[in-house]
Image 1 (cartoon, rainbow, N blue to C red):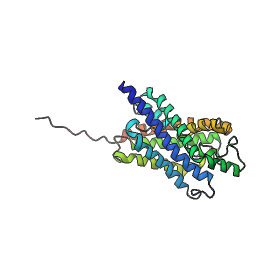
Image 2: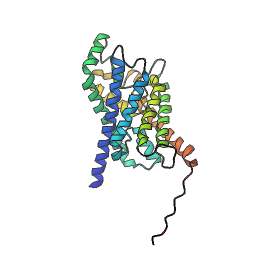
Image 3: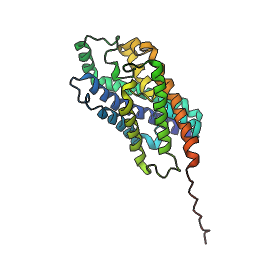
Image 4: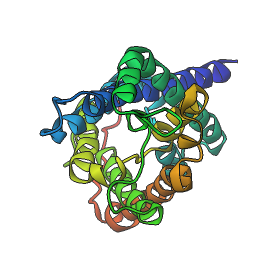
Length: 270
């Protein structure tokens, strides 16, 4: 009974974590895309840092309950390399996607009039993809879905490589105590600032697929799923593969060579 209650709490925690990330991140995407002049057009680092802060805030709020995977790629990598229960992986992933749906719903509640005004002003419709970039990712200029797939493997590999390093118990150079959440957020922001224009740096299947599901039923239709050029699978498959590769690189190329501090001897009790 206690185990079931704890697992329920973990699922709620994962759902809330992704909801927070999407609520904050997609809202700044709306600020970037829907306003002219946008306060972020000449300061894309602002968009990236807000996404990163969304991740940091989510970790601080939910980390003590579920560890804040907040990303199916992280859950999969932790199950493969860090002993996370495989039984929990499907539930965590489902809760994360649900969090993406709820987060998108909240962003829509905030920005629905602005979305409609933007589409009307530019002669766009939701079915044609108007304002879709607020909610989910798509390839940038010159980027094909196959190239985006490779991008997502590399970028998510870097993300999970960094997360494994930051949270490794033997890595004494990593930030200690609660500051790890801030560094993980900065890692997300750095990835976005350096590569966000490629395909909006999904690096998280739930962050992309959850909002797509919401938009599918809110008028975006085929522009959400399957998306132009059937792009929907790229932000799912790429991050899942990349997370496994990045975590494996840390586990086999870095972790084995970190010196283990000798366990201090405890004198026998008198």
